[in-house]
Length: 446
Image 1: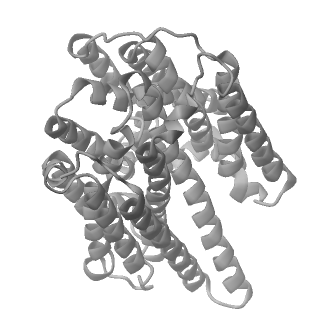
Image 2: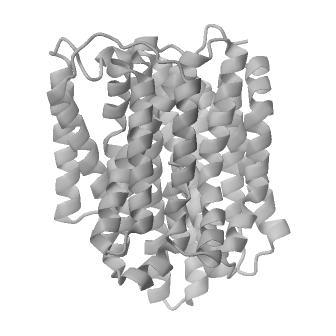
């Protein structure tokens, strides 16, 4: 639900704009409001799960997300829709922050844990591209309201299943670090706000630079608080866990490259090849099917046979190769020769690498810190994706603008901009592959 909701809205934006009378500037806030609160509250949500019980926080977050989805679906004004999207992002942050922790605490056998993470990885990786397909179907057959209302029955069913299937778990004694929570949440909110608006108002503008500086200062204050309080929101000892720190860095780079694949290849198919939104969603099906096969069964077997490190490094290398192929896609591209090979490589790479990255992050974390570690992983993926997409979209747009002013026609200029962005995205994935091979270390690795 929460991954799908980051992309399902994209297809419906023209319909929402026409129906509710959004301006171009305000329209972006339908996505930004969700991204802002989702990124801002992940760490806090994870720590609250550690302190007050992951099951309780999961159900609270799920309830908030579902009610906010209902409000989004029933809204008929701009302000209500944007506010409801912000609340939806907050609910998504709370329940997604503790999701990994719940899985890690439910499954202790390495093989079963790898299988469980495989299912989680498939849903996380496939939700984005499924969102484009489902968004196109719902918007064209019903109306845009249903891209939100579809969450309501799912949320109710999941809530009822959680009551009967999830154990209550244990609360960990400790007090909430209020000032730590305030400073880190404000820091993340400022950083996400600066990132999602960077392309619109300029990366070197006073507002963007001021917010990024404010975010850094608040983060420094947060670390100062954490070094002194008796019950820190984020124990600094977690940064001494090498595999967790490495997984967060690799996860940020991986997410940046994957976002470039999903969003920029969708733009290439729509604006260069003139695919319909539904055709774009169908074009991602091969990658989704491959990710499903890997995540549900093959990935766990690979981890049991080769350990965690090798699948991450090799999977990310394949992803880098797939993005490299997209950087050669021509104006009159043919799906079977110019898109499908990249989709296959990226599907294999994502299916192979995502599950082990999550396993690596949680590998050495104690149960009482698993919620926070889960929130850290989700934050790394989210921030990496948001920052990576902002950088690559800005890079593509600037290259396109320069070439148009030099006299190149718009289609060729757009294509060149996408090519440059794909190459940089490929470099992100390649760097992540190298870091994974060099830095991960697992005592129990086969």
